[in-house]
Amino acid sequence: MKNSTNYSRIAVAPMMDWTDRHCRYFMRLLSPGVRLYTEMVTTAALCHGDAATLLQFDPSEHPLALQLGGSDPATMARAAKMGADAGYDEININIGCPSDRVQSGAFGACLMAKPKLVGDCVAAARDAVDIPVTVKTRIGIDDHDSFEFLQDFVATVAASGCELFVVHARKAILSGLSPKDNRRIPPLNYDRVYEIKRAFPDLTIVLNGGITTIEQCRRQLEMLDGVMIGRKAYQQPWFLFELEQAMREKDTVRQVEREQIIEQMYPYIEQQLCAGVPLKRITRHLFGLFAGQAGARAWRRYLSEHAHQSGAGIEVLQRALEQLPRAA
Image 1 (spheres, rainbow, N blue to C red):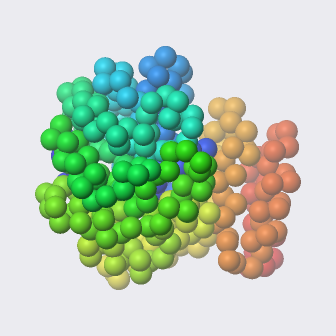
Image 2: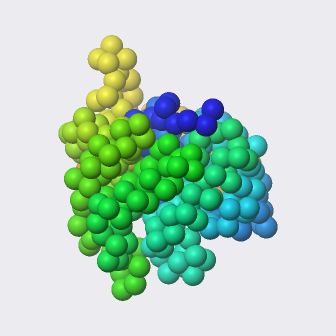
């Protein structure tokens, strides 16, 4: 099915070095309905590198999108086919990352200046797969910071068959700002995203950028088709649980405690340890689970001090839980 009509209303943003498969497994426990995205994988790395490792995921992660970075239509098509064959539910093309490394590869946010090329990549990928091909973009780049510029970009790419756009409501400044600064210095412009939805009512428009509260999510969902949560979901992952509960009908609310989520991780962690994955690669994603709770600092400290040790296993998490007042 090439359309995106079944897109989850809530998604977690693709975040480099953060949303790996261990992180996504953890987030799925917190929120069964949220749509998850991989870190950006370059088409070159996928086509010429260790594809099996790059595409690895647990079946519980569905619905799951593979985000690709690239600018060559033929390579994009090949990488998209690999993702679809591996079982991903969506191929998402990154047209939003402003980093120097990405620009040097001629993809990411700089491609907003080449909408025809982006459209060619979308068309090539769509011809290769039977799952939705979507685009994650900014509202503009550098001096190209107008509704007309964004409208032209969306219209050109949509004409190639893209039916869903995730729009980060900040422009990207391609020189002089780090990726971190590009996430906070250019001002948010939600109104421009609303304008795009009004101009293209048949497209699925998902908002990304600056969403940190349940009330903000509710307000944006009144205007748009979906919201994508970024660092809030990683740094305070319990927010994902609270958000999904707030969106559920009252008779379907889950009664789960943070400690139970950790315990539900145990079988997965033991499986990964047996496969040779060091414990620290998994526990680094769990640091923020108790953010704002009594004992949160002790939890983080215990994990950081012990998870990296040789032979570290489930007992590290069990003892870390004992650092929390409620467990004591």
